[in-house]
Figure 1 (cartoon, one colour):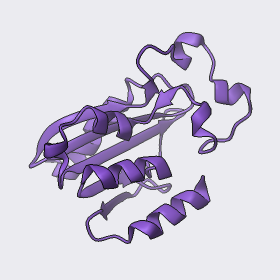
Figure 2: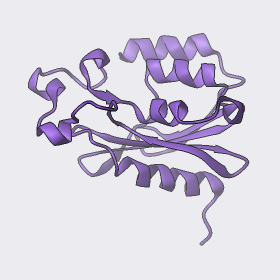
Figure 3: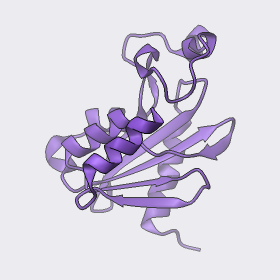
Figure 4: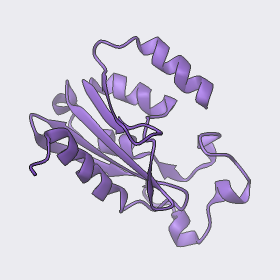
Length: 158
C-alpha cells in the first residue's frame, strides 16, 4: 500500500521524535513545502544546555509540574519551534507542518501549545497536521482559521 503524502510526512515526524532528549514525551516535527522537506525538529534541550536525558532526571517531574504547565521551567525547546528556527522564512510561507508525539512508547496528542501556535502564525505556515487524543489525524488550515479562537483554547489548556 502506498502512503498518502500526509501519512508519509507524519511518519517522518514520528522518526524525528526518536531524537528527543525529553524524558516525559517525545515530539517530532517536519516542515514541508511542495512535498519537499525544508526543516525538521524534535523536542530537546537548548543548545549548550544539558538535557534531561544527560542529567538523568526531568526537572519538571522532580517539581511535580503537570504536563502543559510552566513551560518556562523546562530545558527543552519544542519540536515545532526547532523546525521553525532552522527553516528559511521565505520557504515557510504556506508550508505544511507535520507533528507527531509519543509518551511511554505510545502515540499521543500532538496539538501545538499556545507558544507554538504563535510561532506557526508568524512563520506563515499554511497547514498543520497532527494526531489528536484519539489518534485521529487532524488538519488545520492556518490561513482560514480564527486565530484568536485557537489561542483562547490553547490558553485554557495551559
